[in-house]
Picture 1 (tube, rainbow over the protein chains, first blue to last red):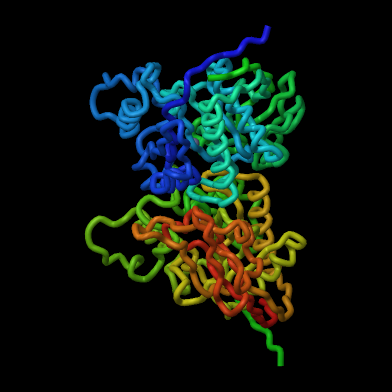
Picture 2: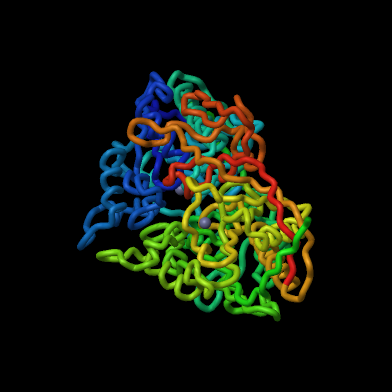
Length: 309
Length: 309
Ligand SMILES: [Zn+2]
Ligand SMILES: [Zn+2]
């Protein structure tokens, strides 16, 4: 019954830093690797570090004109926009021509896109496709290697929540999100975690290229269900903030009746759903403007076939 | 020997929020109190909440053109600058005319200026003058009321480190700095701490106005000695980051030989001073651009005379 999926060797891998210019772990690591490529070199493949939003990095802001990690859709990439093009759209087209084109045979095999969050998510791998056995096997390998440190896998396949990521131009995109770290700050502990995740990802690909066979595996992932916004007042300002009992509780069960928000007057809003969910991106700084206080997820187990060259 | 210092009643108090537009505890509290003044009302005095940098608050950035909390010097306030005036200088002049003028009899009695930091400083009171018995007594009262929660007092009197703060237009300026909280994030626990500090400050002034006598007191403060920058490379970029054993260790002793920084290659820089110091503002996001990785302080005990109306 169990079949094995055959897959061609990984030839080209990119490591993106600075997709958000104020998420400093990836910025510092990629800048370092641009000078010290030997640390990420693996003999069976090309590994290319790349700063994706240099102007945002220079100013230490998330973006200049628009969020680079939301504009890798066909319309933005196709270049038929009229008038002055936002900086990040220009940049997206350039990145697409260097590492894509998106959806083509010529795209890079794997892109590791490095991000930080202010949420207490620890090391997190972001998976875009539940049927991509290669990436599921890679997540499993990284997760196992990181233990006992936790390494959650977030699946953002849901059509209402999925977005056109920078890394989506690769055949196997994977986001690496590590927190908590404030914007504009670099913490040594978070940096080390991110570096470990990248190195385990590269090790996996090297072993695979060398002929290592990976047995069938199951992977527990948190599948995004829905974004939850803050309560807002008439003028759209925050009407309440994350309740202390939800703060820093990413990946922990939120049960019906549990508090989610609290107003300045102490009024509490509780979760009224029917099922236990697992919040993530709780109180992420960058998501206030995206009307997201946290994302609800459910636990799902994915299966991957055995993998070999 | 012990003398008592007589002081006139406190008539006008301002509470400033949003001096830095992305430090959200003060922004949210002041916006709330603008609608619910009863929460901060004390019958013996006027208490006026005020958003000092509304444009920066609107955009959720530290400042628009220049740091509002550095421009309350006589030159900036006097208005003889040529050409287009930066937004924050305009705003400083407006604030000075509403709550000052700086150094005059007409200035507000007390300004509480609300700030957040990404450093693990807990509740911190920032004192500008070691001979201001009234403010020392207020700090002592707040510190005692906050116990067992810690409430450090930072003295920024050193001429090389002192800066022209927004609150410096009051007779008794006091900064309230609470962390850790990322920029652009509001945490319920940090908000509650800040609210408590403000309320204890107002209680102190109300008791004082009612005739309560405060006995002579001593106050342990951390006096700023020097700013320490990150190691930098040729191009001015970060050459090293805060060492994990210094991260989150604000107010803890840094002894000769203790690690301060670590490079991407794992090289460690240690503290080579002769005396134990107490670091603060360790890894504050806003201070990367100010060339400050942390500030060195020493412990000093201040004495204040008894205080009565
Ligand atoms: Zn990001
Ligand atoms: Zn501030």
